[in-house]
Image (cartoon, rainbow, N blue to C red; front, top):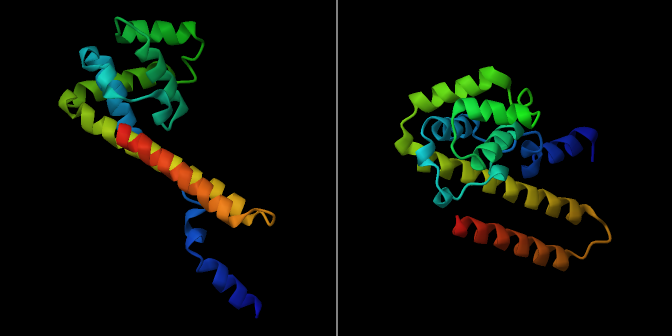
Length: 167
Protein backbone atom coordinates (compact mmCIF):
# COMPACT_ATOMS: atom_id res chain seq x y z
CA UNK A 1 0.00 0.00 0.00
CA UNK A 2 1.50 3.37 -1.00
CA UNK A 3 1.88 6.33 1.33
CA UNK A 4 -1.05 8.19 -0.29
CA UNK A 5 -3.34 5.21 0.31
CA UNK A 6 -2.40 5.06 3.99
CA UNK A 7 -3.12 8.78 4.42
CA UNK A 8 -6.42 8.47 2.59
CA UNK A 9 -7.44 5.57 4.82
CA UNK A 10 -6.63 7.56 7.96
CA UNK A 11 -8.34 10.73 6.71
CA UNK A 12 -11.50 8.78 5.89
CA UNK A 13 -11.69 7.35 9.43
CA UNK A 14 -14.84 8.87 11.01
CA UNK A 15 -13.09 9.83 14.25
CA UNK A 16 -10.35 11.75 12.48
CA UNK A 17 -12.49 14.85 11.91
CA UNK A 18 -13.59 15.17 15.53
CA UNK A 19 -10.17 14.94 17.12
CA UNK A 20 -9.44 18.65 16.66
CA UNK A 21 -12.88 20.00 17.55
CA UNK A 22 -13.75 22.10 20.57
CA UNK A 23 -15.97 20.41 23.14
CA UNK A 24 -19.66 21.41 23.10
CA UNK A 25 -20.29 24.60 25.00
CA UNK A 26 -22.65 27.55 25.08
CA UNK A 27 -20.84 30.58 26.49
CA UNK A 28 -23.61 33.02 25.56
CA UNK A 29 -26.16 30.88 27.37
CA UNK A 30 -23.92 30.57 30.42
CA UNK A 31 -23.70 34.37 30.51
CA UNK A 32 -27.48 34.67 30.22
CA UNK A 33 -27.99 32.40 33.23
CA UNK A 34 -25.47 34.32 35.32
CA UNK A 35 -26.93 37.63 34.14
CA UNK A 36 -30.49 36.60 35.01
CA UNK A 37 -29.38 35.38 38.45
CA UNK A 38 -27.55 38.65 39.01
CA UNK A 39 -30.38 40.96 37.92
CA UNK A 40 -33.30 38.77 39.02
CA UNK A 41 -32.01 36.89 42.08
CA UNK A 42 -35.55 35.85 42.94
CA UNK A 43 -35.41 33.56 39.88
CA UNK A 44 -32.77 31.37 41.54
CA UNK A 45 -34.17 28.10 42.77
CA UNK A 46 -32.93 24.74 43.98
CA UNK A 47 -35.31 23.30 41.41
CA UNK A 48 -33.17 24.80 38.62
CA UNK A 49 -31.05 21.66 38.94
CA UNK A 50 -27.89 23.25 37.57
CA UNK A 51 -24.44 22.83 39.04
CA UNK A 52 -21.16 24.68 38.64
CA UNK A 53 -19.48 21.82 36.76
CA UNK A 54 -22.09 22.20 34.03
CA UNK A 55 -20.52 25.52 33.07
CA UNK A 56 -17.78 25.08 30.49
CA UNK A 57 -15.84 28.25 31.27
CA UNK A 58 -14.02 28.05 34.60
CA UNK A 59 -14.62 31.74 35.43
CA UNK A 60 -18.36 31.20 34.91
CA UNK A 61 -18.20 28.16 37.20
CA UNK A 62 -16.58 30.25 39.91
CA UNK A 63 -19.12 33.06 39.54
CA UNK A 64 -21.97 30.54 39.69
CA UNK A 65 -20.51 28.85 42.80
CA UNK A 66 -20.16 32.21 44.49
CA UNK A 67 -23.70 33.30 43.55
CA UNK A 68 -25.14 30.01 44.77
CA UNK A 69 -23.81 30.64 48.27
CA UNK A 70 -24.89 34.27 48.49
CA UNK A 71 -28.03 35.54 50.12
CA UNK A 72 -28.88 38.27 49.33
CA UNK A 73 -27.33 38.53 45.89
CA UNK A 74 -26.56 41.74 44.04
CA UNK A 75 -23.73 43.07 41.92
CA UNK A 76 -21.96 44.96 44.69
CA UNK A 77 -21.99 42.01 47.09
CA UNK A 78 -20.88 39.66 44.30
CA UNK A 79 -17.88 41.87 43.47
CA UNK A 80 -16.96 42.11 47.16
CA UNK A 81 -17.19 38.34 47.62
CA UNK A 82 -15.14 37.59 44.48
CA UNK A 83 -12.48 40.02 45.72
CA UNK A 84 -12.54 38.43 49.17
CA UNK A 85 -11.95 35.03 47.52
CA UNK A 86 -9.14 36.62 45.46
CA UNK A 87 -10.69 35.49 42.17
CA UNK A 88 -12.12 38.80 40.97
CA UNK A 89 -9.55 39.26 38.19
CA UNK A 90 -9.63 35.56 37.30
CA UNK A 91 -13.37 35.75 36.55
CA UNK A 92 -12.95 38.82 34.35
CA UNK A 93 -13.05 41.71 36.80
CA UNK A 94 -15.45 44.61 36.83
CA UNK A 95 -15.95 44.65 33.05
CA UNK A 96 -17.16 41.07 32.98
CA UNK A 97 -19.52 41.48 35.94
CA UNK A 98 -20.93 44.65 34.33
CA UNK A 99 -21.39 42.74 31.07
CA UNK A 100 -23.25 39.98 32.92
CA UNK A 101 -25.46 42.63 34.54
CA UNK A 102 -26.27 44.14 31.13
CA UNK A 103 -26.98 40.71 29.66
CA UNK A 104 -29.31 40.01 32.60
CA UNK A 105 -31.18 43.26 31.99
CA UNK A 106 -31.44 42.57 28.24
CA UNK A 107 -32.60 38.94 28.65
CA UNK A 108 -36.17 37.94 29.38
CA UNK A 109 -35.96 36.12 32.73
CA UNK A 110 -38.71 33.77 31.54
CA UNK A 111 -36.16 32.08 29.26
CA UNK A 112 -34.08 30.94 32.27
CA UNK A 113 -35.26 27.32 32.17
CA UNK A 114 -34.55 27.09 28.44
CA UNK A 115 -31.03 28.43 29.05
CA UNK A 116 -30.47 25.96 31.87
CA UNK A 117 -31.58 23.11 29.61
CA UNK A 118 -29.06 24.17 26.93
CA UNK A 119 -26.20 24.27 29.46
CA UNK A 120 -27.23 20.86 30.85
CA UNK A 121 -27.28 19.35 27.37
CA UNK A 122 -23.84 20.69 26.45
CA UNK A 123 -22.50 19.41 29.78
CA UNK A 124 -23.89 15.93 29.10
CA UNK A 125 -22.49 16.00 25.56
CA UNK A 126 -19.04 16.77 26.98
CA UNK A 127 -19.40 13.91 29.45
CA UNK A 128 -20.40 11.54 26.67
CA UNK A 129 -17.48 12.64 24.48
CA UNK A 130 -15.05 12.21 27.40
CA UNK A 131 -16.48 8.77 28.11
CA UNK A 132 -16.11 7.69 24.49
CA UNK A 133 -12.57 9.04 24.21
CA UNK A 134 -11.57 7.15 27.36
CA UNK A 135 -13.02 4.07 25.73
CA UNK A 136 -11.07 4.80 22.57
CA UNK A 137 -7.85 5.01 24.59
CA UNK A 138 -8.65 1.66 26.19
CA UNK A 139 -9.39 0.06 22.80
CA UNK A 140 -5.93 1.06 21.59
CA UNK A 141 -4.31 -0.70 24.55
CA UNK A 142 -3.05 -4.01 23.04
CA UNK A 143 -3.50 -5.97 26.26
CA UNK A 144 -7.06 -4.75 26.81
CA UNK A 145 -9.94 -7.22 26.86
CA UNK A 146 -12.38 -6.02 24.20
CA UNK A 147 -15.38 -7.61 25.87
CA UNK A 148 -14.54 -5.85 29.17
CA UNK A 149 -14.12 -2.53 27.34
CA UNK A 150 -17.56 -2.91 25.78
CA UNK A 151 -19.09 -3.69 29.19
CA UNK A 152 -17.32 -0.72 30.78
CA UNK A 153 -18.37 1.67 28.00
CA UNK A 154 -21.93 0.41 28.21
CA UNK A 155 -21.93 1.03 31.97
CA UNK A 156 -20.46 4.54 31.57
CA UNK A 157 -22.96 5.50 28.85
CA UNK A 158 -25.80 4.13 30.99
CA UNK A 159 -24.63 6.34 33.87
CA UNK A 160 -24.67 9.39 31.60
CA UNK A 161 -28.15 8.45 30.39
CA UNK A 162 -29.33 8.10 34.00
CA UNK A 163 -27.90 11.53 34.80
CA UNK A 164 -29.66 12.94 31.73
CA UNK A 165 -32.97 11.41 32.83
CA UNK A 166 -32.56 12.85 36.33
CA UNK A 167 -32.07 16.43 35.14
